[in-house]
Image 1: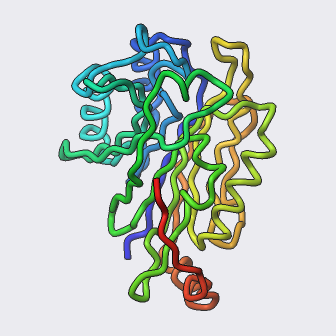
Image 2 (image 1 turned 180 degrees about the vertical axis):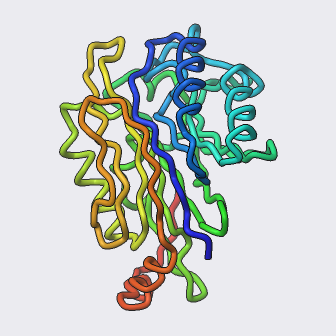
Length: 264
């Protein structure tokens, strides 16, 4: 099977300034000159983690979505990003998985962060997202979701693993960077899956510093790539399906996983 090339973009964000951020990502993505299959942007890529619908919420057909459609087609790669979406029933922190042909899938953040206004102002999602990119099954989570192993759990069905790569897009503060690194490693090991996680850097409008620590980890828990702290960085990593399948064939823990039903 085709190996998967994933580009992680770790950068600072302009607080509540959508046009500046979109212009910024126009420039950052133009630096990607090597082939890639999947491009990952930090959580709320166009505004930073601001829970201010008056300034940050957009309809699905707004500038953020237009940028993702245009850039995905231009780079001939899938792009994943989240932004605040306005719907008839309220506001969502929505992850969009945009494909080069213009079709897309969405995931609404399930676990809203209780130490911010997110849990009061936004609506929580209730459905997981599994997408296929170049034959790879990919599961997506957003920031705080990472703390909930049951929500992130891989499954073993009909002799196959449900997903091969777990993607996490985040605005995770530097004060909890060790938690971030530990959870990413744990999610890779316990799910026998690659993990790719992108976090922002810089200080946000609430005064919280972000160290980035974007990472790519294999199913054994080995760190393939770790971004420099507090630095803008763009890196493309390659995930090997042959290596993943070889490891899973040698240590097929999925066969021993408990089966359970999750109620949300």
